[in-house]
Image (tube, rainbow, N blue to C red; front, side, top):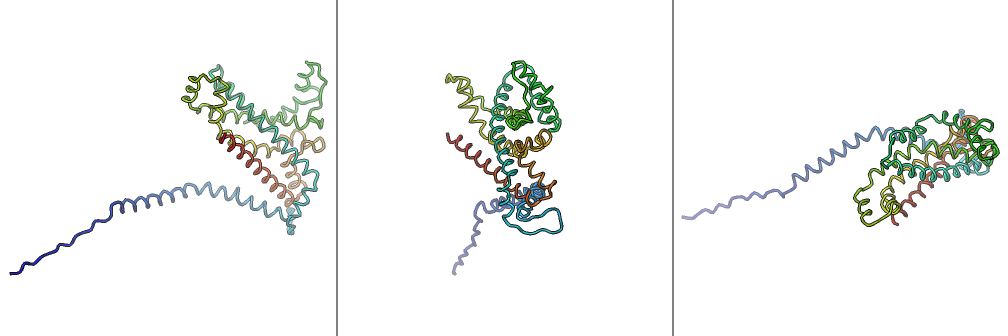
Length: 314
């Protein structure tokens, strides 16, 4: 009698982790889809109000479009004309000079004030509010107040100088003082936002590092330079970028106070763009100016990025 050997079939189990890995991929895909859905309103907004206008400006800058039915392609003709235009040259120089002076001075003052407000002082809320009020005040109202301050006959500026025996000055009518006078207003108006940003960042500086520096016998200045400033580097870059964009977009302050005068001493890029586009109806020419302004802003931001990297590496 022969015995029958039965070989039971062996069930090979699935490799461990296959099902969880598939579920993980599905979860990631669903998260990606949810992320795109949540981002879609912001992306749509950016496409409509940023990408499309920028592309339109680039195209229009190569034409002689003037709000009419007929227009022609001029290529780089507008750009060639720009660099022969003395008004554009003056506005470009004035805008760059305004930015170079206003940005570092306003950032330094704002940081110094924020460090002071970060101390335990009485009336802290009042000082924060007082410094921030100019930021939320309409620029036209600020310009009107400063027009009175700079008034040659009854203004506060000449009244203050007379206390020290100085002769009155025609602040906004004198080519030597017109642009510096606007710079003072720009610095004063922009302090509030920078102070609030710096103050929030200062309150986030590591207390452990500051206490360690105290134990090592570091002075206040050494703690500020070696602990506080490095911690503020990302915030410094953010303030720098917003300041660059803000100073290159200065318009209403100049328009109300000087209209670009005397002569072209306070003529800035946005004012020149406005006059070419909406007064002379040269939209193609104004678009070319806008492209140049965007390039200059990008160069300033790039320089700021390099400075931040060098500061971090140090």
